[in-house]
Image (cartoon, rainbow, N blue to C red):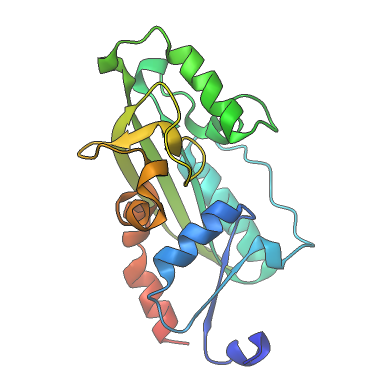
Length: 210
């Protein structure tokens, strides 16, 4: 069935990202929703996302969702997430994806963070992931939710899956990094999963009323 035909019976939702890792995670977590046609900004090459000028995860997620929804005239789900290290005054925080520079790689970001944590005791290596997800229609913001995943950071990369800081993050209650656990386990326990769970009833209703 073509996408044009699908649009007659499905609910279209645009993920406001071109990040392949995030798109894959959201597809995995939303695969149980029937009648959902999940798109991403990769399907709208003419659209240029706004600069992330917010001072919080919530402000950035809302900005991305509302701007894209209005410009594309579609329902949009946008998220902003990052790693928070209390002993470093909350860094890298909203700058997690560009901690080592605007075009920094995940490896460069991790190296900078580990260098700045070198003097910390084991107790001060506590950290948590934060995810804020905003849902918007062309008329404006509909809902904004948060999810947190607490754990600690190790001193060297372990594991080959995941992305961002996953190779050095271990969730409390586990003995492997997110990058060692793999997508299936991570998608059940992550900050992104916890935030998305708070939206599932709303998304289910939208899918069932198309």
